[in-house]
Image (cartoon, rainbow, N blue to C red; front, side, top):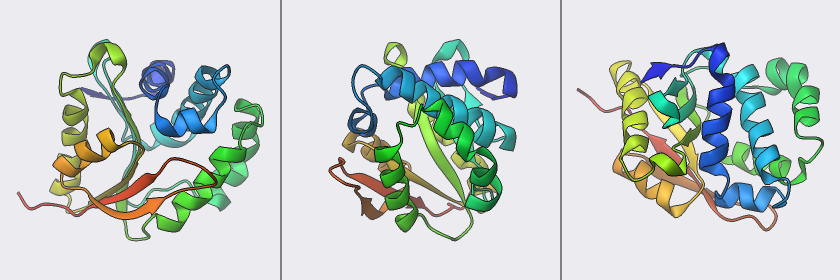
Length: 194
């Protein structure tokens, strides 16, 4: 495993696009004929402009998995990030934002304000699933958070991902829905002591 750099954005985008193509949230958010393009635009833009520059994203070798993390204390707020990058994000998604915008607002209502690591996405593409690589990716950054005494937060987008996160000590702190979306679960993990 290694830290992702700016030169890895295309690989991150491909991994996460493959991993999330059939994710319930993405199926709900984007029409089938546009889904691959929209999911790639979503992850590609956020990786390049929001997550990778903050130095906490990771990659597995061979395109087997990737994570988009923000370290504790970092966030993409409206005044610094979205004011600067909002128009570019809208353009990247070709204006197809109605459902994702509604979900973003619903997610913000549950998102904790205490300092924490934030996992936007963890993905293992279909060719690499079933080998425990999601757990390897999670364990890597959670060990760092624990070492620093810092909490972590994420939103689970499927019952399968929720079960994985629960095995790593995350607990549901709220259910999230927007419009007619599937349920997401906001999940918090307090740091564990070594």
